[in-house]
Amino acid sequence: MADETLAVSTTQLSQLAETRTKPKYVDEPGTLYNGLRPESARQKAEVQLNDLIDRLHGGLMAVTRKQFVLSEFKKTLAEFEPGDTEDRERLLRYLERIMDILGIESSDGLLNRWLYGMTEDEFWLALEFRICRELSGMSDAVLRPMWCDGIRGASCDPKQVRRT
Image 1 (tube, one colour):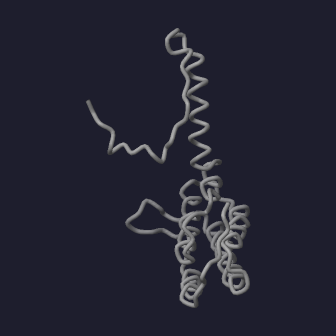
Image 2 (image 1 turned 45 degrees about the vertical axis):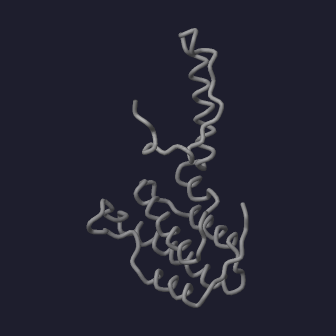
Image 3 (image 1 turned 90 degrees about the vertical axis):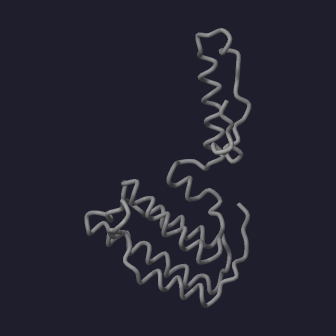
């Protein structure tokens, strides 16, 4: 994980403060998200996110480092309880919004690991090993000795696959 210095401006701090004032985990008309339920859980999750924003707002005055922000994210991710995927994804959208405000391009896999249990690179490696295991168990003598020697998901673009 590469740490970087953040150039935090008063405009960015104001945007964080504005984000804090907005209700969170509520029904959003025009989307499939209908809010975190029950209301007591929604309020608890909103307090947790607002606490994160408060910690960042105060801490970024002294520590303008990406790793400071990500370490604060980890605390909030660890205390977030709802098990519903939509609510977990909503939390990540809030964190991504904070990253956008602060000019952070990547969470270095933190958000993917929390939501999916692995980073994208770890997924491709696990898939490679799974394909090798499946091939080795094939009854077809032609397929059984084959193996997969790497999958690069970032270089795969279904739009560029030629159909013959």
